[in-house]
Length: 74
Image 1 (cartoon, rainbow, N blue to C red):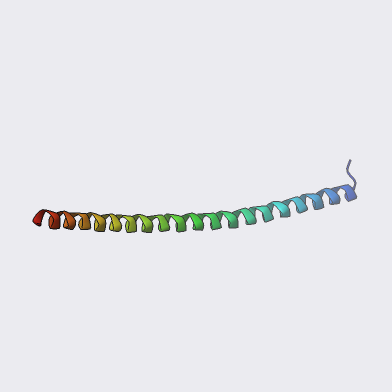
Image 2: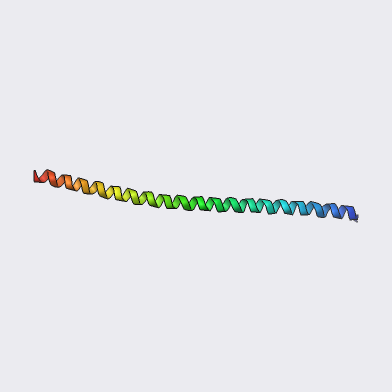
């Protein structure tokens, strides 16, 4: 049978392990939150870049169209 000292040592060991697990859980939770925020920022940045790319494409197409009009009217 375990002595009271053995039981106390086991309990302290378990408490230490639980504290470590809690700390790892907190750290992983914060890291996860940070990664999700970073991903959201990248998704937003990508959407903005796609929008700017589409605007640039439209402007280039309009310029090409105007140049073709000028060319055919000459």
